[in-house]
Length: 257
Image 1: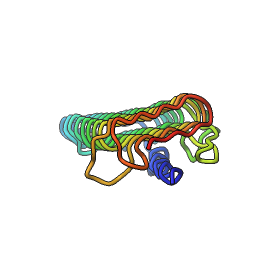
Image 2: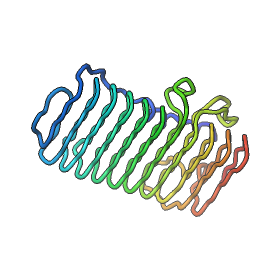
Image 3: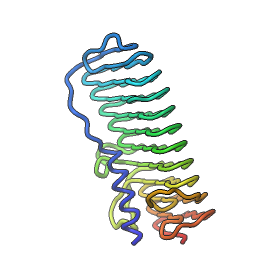
């Protein structure tokens, strides 16, 4: 049961780490306030889109939006937003913001960041890092020093935060996980309301609050892992509040309830 629960989380994170994006052949481009649309840069009144490098794409189609893409095949999109900003730096990097005052930053080859809703922040730094924040006032941050050859299904570290007032942090790279029974990337997931999931180390996994359908419920749960190959699950099998699960040490799995 636990494997299925966190496995679903992993599938969601994989979607962050390997989004689809059409190949392009255009080079550096600039569009400001709807002027200069061409190549693969587009903007609307009050917004700015900049692409630097071969095959870059940048689109800012909201009010006071910014999209900035640098390096071969990088793409940044601020879609229908107000005060949204997306920055993608690195070969194949992708950053998308699509809400109100949302911020997405992807730095590193094939790094991916997506923020959707309102007052969300998604930051992914490092090769194959992925971060997604969806809902309201959520934060997702992922960082990795993995090499391209170390990635698992295109991902090194993934953080996902869904709901209201949650944050997820994943720092590490792929490593063997007894929970999954194979090598897996570092992953953290926080859903619901006011929950936290943090992993520091390789092959770790943390989830706070079940990935249940709305209506959202207040949680204030925390899942923390510091080491390698360990897993922490807080309020995954039954709804709870003020639950703290902290795991220190290698190859351990702890859950409450």
